[in-house]
Length: 96
Image (cartoon, rainbow, N blue to C red; front, side, top):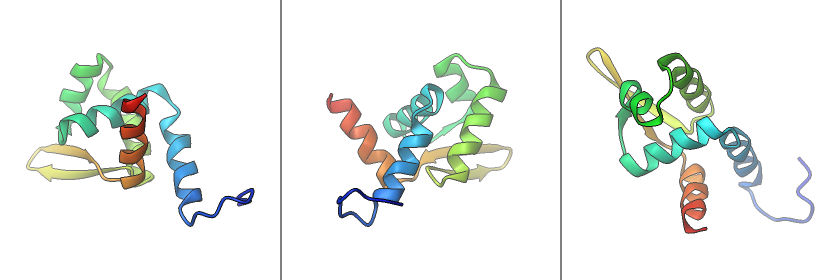
């Protein structure tokens, strides 16, 4: 990846996270998780007023990119924001 003179070992990481968060639903899910900590799909679905399948599809992409992590508690899966880069981007957004 060409860095255009920017010296940062994390540049590719930032770019990948920004690409994934550029979708409004994924951005909303990540922001919700940042502000609420741990949530399951039902709560995310309820808060964002989206279908379960829509939320699940977007969480899957966030999980694949290691932006969101999952923990199982019996029959429910709880999600949390796990990427420090994503947290920094979302904190910067909230300051705007």
